[in-house]
View 1: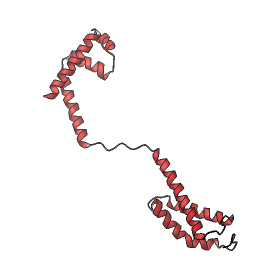
View 2 (view 1 turned 45 degrees about the vertical axis):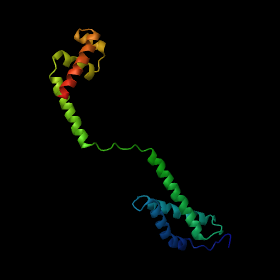
View 3 (view 1 turned 60 degrees about the vertical axis):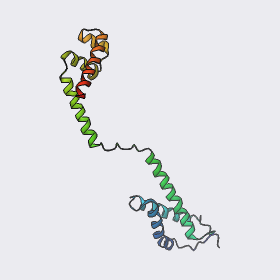
View 4 (view 1 turned 60 degrees about the horizontal axis):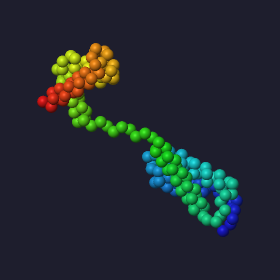
Length: 166
């Protein structure tokens, strides 16, 4: 075989091998992938550059030469895409409608149970859980001791749990 062939007809080679490159790229990365045509064009440009720079030595057939370039570019594309996909955050799964209904029902039960509490228990739960105040801060607002706050919170929780169970 010749080492360098200045008589290579680049247009004829591209015309003959473009359908094969198209097929290989579509099969490897999927024809529904919008970038498949870009990958094919990059391969064609790469083949033309290598042929013009006399990088085709003639040790193998031109088909094998193009096949190697095509395979390497496909692998590069897949590697690049898999790196990008690793860093994309996963979307939250769709909420389960049964869980949503159940959560809403539990919230309504808890709301009704809290409404039935005496005002001093409602207020201590409101300040402690909703406002996020410490026991000491709640004690100061309600003019009671921190231990009384703890007692009222615990007692209110037990009353709410008892009403919910009914």
